[in-house]
Image (tube, rainbow, N blue to C red; front, side, top):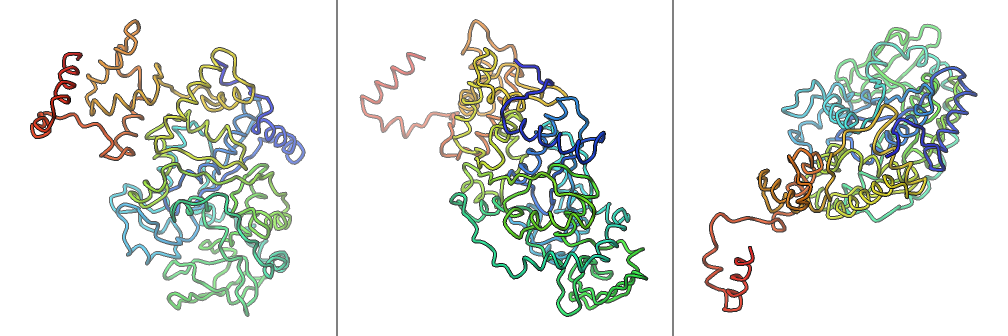
Length: 502
């Protein structure tokens, strides 16, 4: 088994990006930690497509760390974004939540029964827990805290002073017809289409307000808290800004040099943060990477803030095998927490590590998970015996641990399909499961079911959560007398043979 903390320098995509990012960081900010970034909007369940936004820079940051460089992986929680819509399938949420549309995510109440103080904190917490299980080390930044504490005050005033320059850049793209979207693969249903989209921020307006002029800043209303506001005027010398709210009719004049209840519009906010944080590497989804979109426009606007655009690969769609069945029962797109219920962190990391960011792949929730586990176990064996290819060794090393060490693993990793079958026929009886699994290798029987955990628990969860009830084994407590009476002589003889054999 390779030493986890060593560099995995080879020809894989992670190493190539690490080379490029280290060189670029030394050019831009010599002697400083390398900065890579991700952005996540806790506007609802953060799904497996969004996880690629984190795993891509995580893997690159981890490789840089293995090589002995200092590196920071920033995750910007876009919790000061507006609440856009009520997501489907969220337990404890009904149509009344639509009254909060337009408010910051941190001002929207959490789903009923949640221990968290806000909508944003509720969905952020689930992702933080999953990232810890996956071994992802990061520095979290709440954009609500950044904006409301005045951290970005100078950047906001700078953007307002240079609003004409920003408007001129944006105007190059406003009249261009958006290119037709390429359908990367046939979506199963509306939920899978949602998984193919990004956070939704790419569709946000760019600050155009018509007759009153262009302003790259959007206040949240002082009365109803919503962002359905229009800036009427702004004075560069006094920083006095007047706005009105179309939702409740409220209007006021404030000094932007003291006002902390608003934010830069997305296409300005993102490049401002690149410059402020000194980001060297940040990937973007397909919704941010098309011509005229946030990433391309941001590459020009970032110069206004004295920064440079990060190296930013476009990452492709992450599909779900078994999505139609899942979305019909859950009403949404599966999250990393859903995946980690049925698979070990190593397998999930491997799925993201072995494919280049621009390659799509699927996370399995159906029978395909058994084939994926078989493939993983074969790779594990090849790595142990020293017969794996260099690229496969690199992906395996990135999956089983990080620069900080190996992830916890199952001591006796028995085949997943075997564990699933045993969990199925024993119906939750641990003593029976241990008896059957021990009989598989009488020379080296399991001393405890813990030796097969957590993989056994993941397989058991898969059986109970994703295998239809009519396909599971049901062990009866009483014989089915009606069925026995209906057997012909050949059937009875076959049954006697079975009983005698047992």
